[in-house]
Image 1 (spheres, chains in turn orange, green):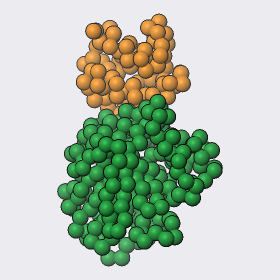
Image 2 (cartoon, chains in turn cyan, orange):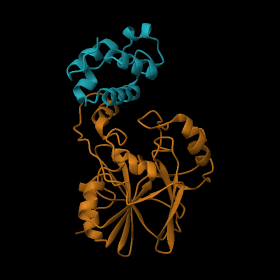
Image 3 (cartoon, chains in turn red, yellow):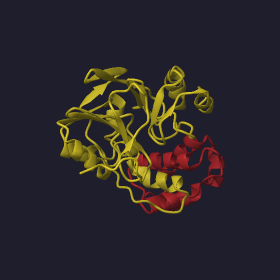
Image 4 (tube, rainbow over the protein chains, first blue to last red):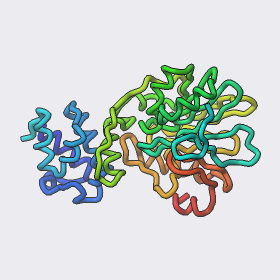
Length: 79
Length: 238
């Protein structure tokens, strides 16, 4: 499975969205992506990509698209 | 050294059943607001949810117990952050449910890995409070279901009650109930943190919490103690 597939799978599973809906997803844009959902999302991504996301980057992870950039800082290329 | 009682930085004597023979104290962690409860009887003492070592140490130094029985209501870091230091400094026996014992060994399940973020949101999204991730060694005694632990002429009863986390337990002692992060004053139970499950809460925890008799003294993991009553049932939908 590619990094993009893994990334999308986590978003689909956590927020119950389709692939087509993912690019528009933003933190606090839907009920499930609140602060608790955000921490859960970070935990899933850390486990899936075997990284430890710094708190500042956790807070910088404000959307599906921005998240790709954040993960890139840890050598995880999502494309 | 005289311990300061009921001030904002020291040990607080808890309110409770009039007939209770063993006095109960609490210490609140200034960072996370979690409560640790302490009971002493002769040369032994019990610590429920060791949370802030710098606040516990003066108390335990004063009490100078031969052994410390540590009981855990669940695996979250705000309820175990003094466990490693306690184990180094005192002769301890730690008791927890099997899932709690697993959880304290994992920085994701014990939430210490994301605690900075959690505190950031909890404190109004203004300041990042440094919080170092940590893990603990397994508990010395694990149980499934229930366990009874003698303490003088009385006993502690721990009952596994998953939902908030897989490792959640409630602890009964006399007319007192230590409920961890269930029944928090003014806060609905959280089941969306790592390992939590609303389905498990509905199947296991909520039905049991409904059986708590009115008048029972409840000692929550955050906030002040209170007695079970209709208003509490209504708020927590019990």
